[in-house]
Length: 616
Ligand code: AMP
Image 1 (cartoon, rainbow, N blue to C red):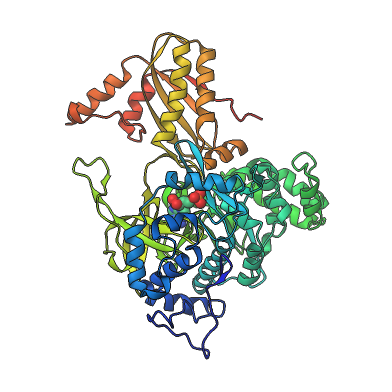
Image 2: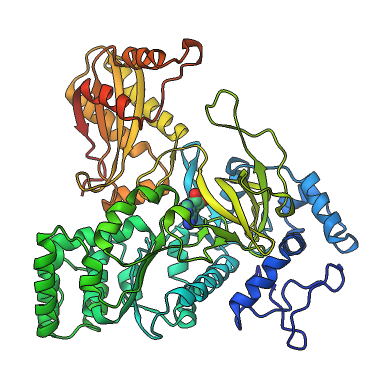
């Protein structure tokens, strides 16, 4: 494995893994994760605390020359003279905890083409767009060869554990609902895209298919087409063409699998026609590259077309219940991120999946990979992620419920992996090979057990996220910025914003895809055309990259603006006080999920507007 050019997985010493906490002889691996990935993981998990110190030493050693680390550790930190524990203490006492905002000026210089060692030693040629925003701006995160290699490694690890529970046929196919967005380049020449886009385009992605002996049915041209609809058509056409060979179905987040299945309702007659004729529908797929890629695979198969057609006719009559076993009879499981913001979609996915098991995919972020699901049998509600102590250096801020019950207070200092306590909740802090140091990831996790000595984490939630439908994560600040835009537009009409709240409608049978709703109470008269403009401006204001991409491709629907009757927020206050709340503690909820409050809001909606931003 390569970290910024440095080998971090060394060769076996006389065929046997050796470990030593001695500074001079310690090696991270002396192990070969490629040979026996589960054996390798058991060993690193057994020595999790030592592995963490060693990982930190490697990160510091590689990047001590950077501008950022020099500020905090000085020109020439005594890396070689300190024991691992001493180096860890030095690092944790000198380098401050930081949020994305603190790294933003450095990342902007990287984006502008500065190749000096700013955050990592080597020049950064790729930046990922992580979910969330910094004060309304998209978040850049460096993507390096280490990012791609750890992706490969966690895929191998996950595949090895899955193979124990759900063996698949070697050489089988995988129906992957995956989407690479077109990379763009900054004016400094740095490639920018989502981390998944970088991964799907990397050599590691090809290596993953070889290593796990499972091959995607869609060629690269389909994955990277950049037009969501054409890609979905391609995935479904090839997935059905190979239907008897599909071993499992996957996507990054479960939402995309559901979106793919939902599209069948409209697309199946054309897909069957294409399988019958060995052609590709010229209206559904216009990209010459995608057409060529599909035509290189499909050939006329009237018998298969007939079989799929009659299955689809039957499925349509039962609202596509159990489509997976019916169309992909050899699929062993569906693999996707099903935890966190994806949990509300599990009922819908179960509707399609029939008795085919769900496997929750591993836990990671654009910043770094975090934990592997080593018990794939667990249902999404109970899945845990075992921390991989070589991927990054992790710290844990203990969280306590605040006294007024309104959330968390976290005045406690972060603890190390060796200090985490069972059943406690923590905010994760990561120090990565990609140039983030003591970076607050914003995820809340609970320690629910240990594998050897590495903690098993359950994902609790993302801190500060208010609205989420798909991969988007919009915070209270994002909502405020959107509403501030509207307040400015209302002022031009001589009206004033009284108060606001919101909700995310997650896609279900009645509403697909999901979308954001913003409720506004306005004092003064405003024309419908001005309100339409407010609605559009708010939709465009949400800058989280997951939101923007999902809106562009239609996997999140148009934002809805609901204008409320005067006095609605007074009624909400009265409701709160009527339920034992006190006026002094009342804060308008900025996101509403309670049935009762939604009833009040919906009863008092005076007019609704649907955004036409992102309309084709
Ligand atoms: P991104 O930065 O866009 O790559 O998104 C990463 C974020 O997605 C993480 O910080 C988590 O909040 C969430 N996430 C990733 N993997 C999982 C998972 N297995 N379960 C729940 N949430 C996840």
